Amino acid sequence: MIIKDTATLREYISVNGSVDIDNVKPYLRKAERNFLKPLIGSAQLLVFESAQTDAIIKEAQALAQEAVANFGYYLYLPIGAVQVTDNGIHVTANENTKTASDKQFKELQRSFKKSGHEALDELLEVMEKSADKFSAWFSSDCYTVYKELLVNKTSILNKYYHIFNSRQTFVAMKPTLKVVEDQFISPVIGSNLLVALKINQTDTVRKQVKELLQQSIVAFTIMKTVDNGMFVLDAKGMHMRFDVLPYEKTVTNINLKVNDFLVHTKKARK
Image (cartoon, rainbow, N blue to C red; front, side, top):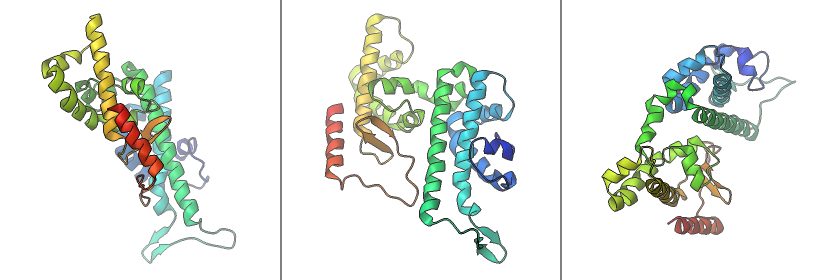
């Protein structure tokens, strides 16, 4: 685990000094498995478990710990708020304290979840900018799977449509990027040229062609995803909807202004 003691946990979240790390460990482990491992791979997680000396790797390690701390507590809160015994499930109450309201509890969950995603996005941005320092990640399927795409980096997608430099948003769009290549690009230029353009280009004309195709792919991808419930779209750009809690539902087409905005954006991208 990348968070091994209560002191490290308290560097990233404000918890009472009486918190026992052993009670939280199962949820920290689950946070690593559910949120970090799919994006950076198990080998890179192992790297973050040991002490580091390189400044950039240490920065990434701290961000990974911050993400795990927040996601771990987001997962731990429901069980942490009660006492589970052989006699049933209870809550603690006395004359000096009272149980938090449902609204307070849910907002606290939202806060941990949002903070976890923010730290995770910053971690991925640091790693992407200095990929040579994270060889375990750079050589894993978590990264190399994107080499098959013409738009294969967050920065390329963000260049043509603002996604707040979010690699999480880029990762979520990968299936659509592939569909767009197959549906709109390959039939027009042919699969052989498409494959050839995916490597680095030196010829000026071919570089220009590659950039125009990347711009087209991004436009078609946004066209296909603007009304997907996974994303929030506004005048600033697009980002993942990660602050909605499991019990909440989001329906945008009941708001005609929002719906008109989505329709207009789809037409403009097309």
